[in-house]
Length: 320
Image (cartoon, rainbow, N blue to C red; front, side):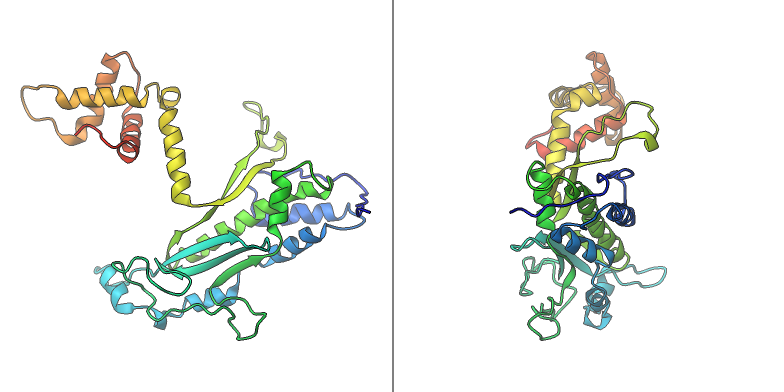
């Protein structure tokens, strides 16, 4: 027989928004715990426990062992004046949901794999001799030496967002709050590391929020609580490219001219025969704006520059 969850009052996520940080999320969960006769679901208890102190301070401290850096390489890349300053060591961060449904992050020297082998030998490494220990304290139950956080059972919360009609209804509403808090852990980690390292994310967390139905000019404090529509881990470079392609396809609605119309105006301006002084390259966006207006289209210099940047990135050939 399925376990029943008895509640004193209905669960609410009032005060939860897309900008809520980890502290806000934990406060909301703590508030709702007072309504529950039987507590959180088992996987939610694990997530809640791990979110209080998610970052692994031991692993973060090991990252600051400067004697393990290639200081000669860092000084050669660093600032030479007014005083010689080494460059920040380059690291990669990989995050994932494990096969057992846990959420974790590991760091690697830039361009290396789990065994310390370089994928980018021409770049070199700022951590010569680096190696990853599967068990940092030599005991079978200790965590890997490069693991920066580990939060249990997050896949259960992701599944409840993905399939909201399944299972219990009550406390599963809090999964939106838990998943936002998990994304905040990644944001906090990046903020901590970027003070001392040049950080590249191999993977990142991306959230898509449901439309909240907020009316125009409605005060923020009157808007309904937020809910997550999609929570995923993906390659940030790929996500950025997808967003740029979507922006390119929607240029007509956003800017008043399409990519094809911008290309035609760009090509016209490049081929235009002129008398007098040679046109300077930095004036090209302004000249394209004038060409667009001559063709009955609106546009600003900033919009044209953005469109040109997108076309250079995603079209094989552009006027030159």
